[in-house]
Image (cartoon, rainbow, N blue to C red):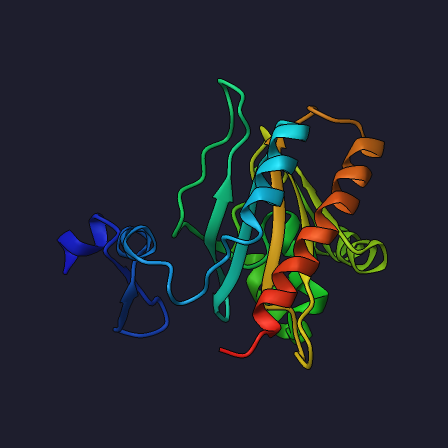
Length: 208
């Protein structure tokens, strides 16, 4: 079991003695088949946005109460870019997606605080400041992590709002090197992600 955990085929669940499928196995499953959810229809738009802004565009899904999983990715055509493997899992409140999930992911105040305390922030960030960023994300329709999770990276996240859902479960995100863009360009990028998020929502709302 330790070998499987070390190779990321399994992931230990801290609050119990159980294990869940790890990132390596998830990534392998995604490479072998995409039958569970086919996001190929939105891939061209993701790729176009990645190439236009020189960023990495991703789609994340909440797979547990405290973590998000990367479903699909479009990397820009630069020789140097941010690589993110399908199946990667991150804490719920990190990145631009974290500012979205904090207030739109159906969390209680206690759950938000606990999830925040589990993150190892590389830049100092108080919970009150984080929540102010989350409120701005809800108002604007997109959230940003400017180097808090990783000092070298900025990430913008936009919620995927599906019909009848009580909480956001999917987030579209764009990740780039920090200081790559000024605030006004980040705002434009957030707006540009919204049509992709809407297209993902339409796919999810289709009956199986």
